[in-house]
Image: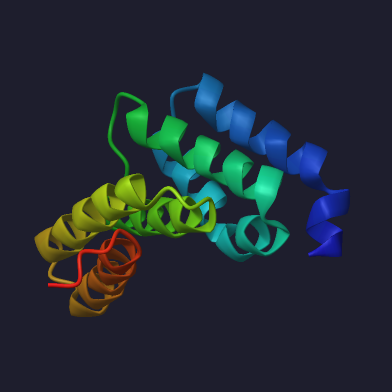
Length: 126
């Protein structure tokens, strides 16, 4: 992760390149692939990673359905990291639906796991 930290300006340049060209697929692929970096650094980095993913999800055009499903799961996990459990639940729910649309049970299971964490943290134990 120290190497990624040293290269963060290059990472941002690549993400910005995809964002300004309205290319949600490469933007989401790169931002989501860095999940453990964003997560492990916490605080500001978790927010930065989540911001890139949210902007990628909001872009017009389409990303590969699997890329979108994974990015939604990463956004959920990063929202957890920031104690934003309501948004984490929304992203997890959307991720599960996206994984179902491509018939990917492992992805559905991971998204449901994230949804369970969000609901638990909101006190929704039923």
